[in-house]
Length: 250
Ligand SMILES: [Zn+2]
Image 1 (cartoon, protein in one colour):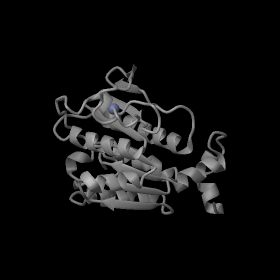
Image 2: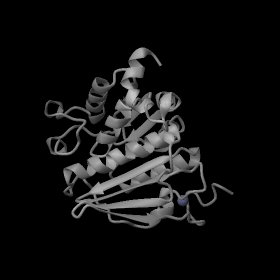
Image 3: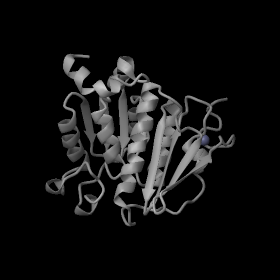
Image 4: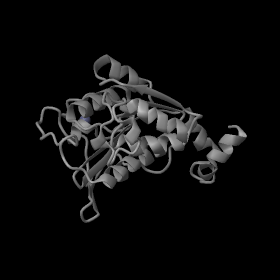
């Protein structure tokens, strides 16, 4: 690290758990963020400011006026621009030293696999089950830890799925073959700071995983009821019959 970096990251380096070695791990890492909306915004803000060396932002959408109430990467004057371009512009202003790759696409299949395989950590900040399951499959296949968040109305949830360990995957919790009601932020109400809370926690878990600090939120699902600001924690166990990870560890 040069002098400028030592200053920029000094409050991280002062943490015993992080120190210079931990900060260097962050600088060497590649985070893949799926979705540059409500959750992806705060998550990307903190990963960029904290010095994750390379961030790939993936989103096929453009900035809409209805996004601005909660998607803090974007600005009024960028309405109509691709979200990833808007996000990249914001993140480079915060930290010009890191690399930001902006992909305006809906990734799936081989393309998604390739991106996940190149990442140290994946943050699922998407808003639909199809994407969440595809991202989970790729993370299990390539043994890349996944930080998954969701938020709608006043309800948020977050967990970590770490296929490097004997831990459950997203499909152990929400089986692919099961039908869930799609609760889409695109049409439902969302309390603005809720996505800030959950997205910031996703960033925290991602940074901890990369720098190898403390215990990750693996095997637990945290649920937030923001109406009453109450958290609950549910233990998640691996499903031996899981269609995604059931045979992966045999
Ligand atoms: Zn599983």
